[in-house]
Image 1 (cartoon, rainbow, N blue to C red):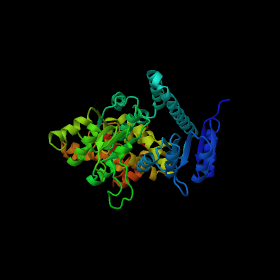
Image 2 (image 1 turned 135 degrees about the vertical axis):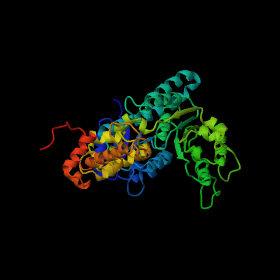
Image 3 (image 1 turned 120 degrees about the vertical axis):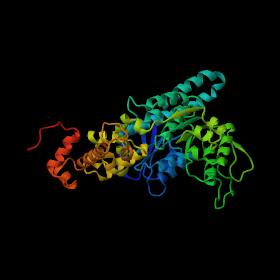
Image 4 (image 1 turned 30 degrees about the vertical axis):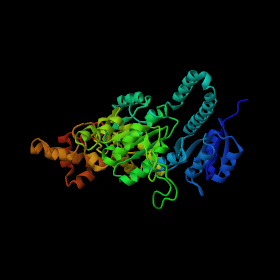
Length: 490
């Protein structure tokens, strides 16, 4: 009889614990604990392959508990469950506790089961790796080939599939290149405007590489002072920093045998550029307070919001560091060049925000999606996430309509692709009449949409008669989205 893999479920809420057990007990042998102390006792008594642990618990948090478990049972795959998806929290969890994956509340039973199966497969492959390592002296090539195939099969879907895009997205070409570069252990520079998803692509490349089962570390260097950045990257020996009672392990050391993603390279000082050049060339660095040079084996991925070749030509960025980091270059397109992706991205961001704030919704209406896709999004994904979250906060219905969208976005006509900035209309070319008409049409469209096409309220707000409003609507050809034009009302 086949023995089921053993899972440990840790949550201080009994109903959540029971729900997880019911979703997983057909495929796994489930142990349950209501706090960290009880969970630690069960770990000592059983051979546990996977831990699901809630982040918010009385006493020790999920991150603190899983960090302790990593030190005592490093092979056990650790998964954290949280209702809070702030990026900083997730990065801290991954870095501190070696989290394999995080699951957000409310979770779906099928998603939870698939996550458990993937984690159990990872544990099994790690055990198998240890066994096969003993046979390497006799079957080196055969074992390495088999292990590589298993790793690729396991990691498929954990990386690039998480970079959301539509079937015909311009991002597909970038992803295809990134897949090729991922399997070659060379530095890659990822460029693109702020908020285009450079960090997500870097993470996907890590999980598509031969270093996938090793740590992934990332840091945004933008605006960070040299002393702080040096401490974060290279760490410090005990007693080297006033007030630091113990030594600090830097991200370079934490990423040993794995991947380090450095974003915001354009703002690095000459001092930090030189320090990173040593890491890029020789894997060498010196922690604060140390007289000895340490060495690591890591893969560097860089991110920049501008073309670093211009900075090199102007003498603001070291040419030798640029060529050490830019063995290959990928450029992330901005959202204004990915209009077909905006609907999918907006819906996904909306559901993530709804889960984080505990406000369930069914999605965005077609009209709302059309307006969002017609905007240029100079802030890219971050601006889109902010807008969707704001819509969620003010929503009263389960399906979010265009009336919730910010006014400057509504004034951009959906389905068109001119320069949508109002400043471009005011300062552009054309007759005064044409430019005034363009501004007036945008104001009319925004007001009608915001007021859900209540023409009486729109006419009152704009200080127009209903007849005058109707005349302007006909003059500019403004139609209510999704509505078949009808004859004029009586």
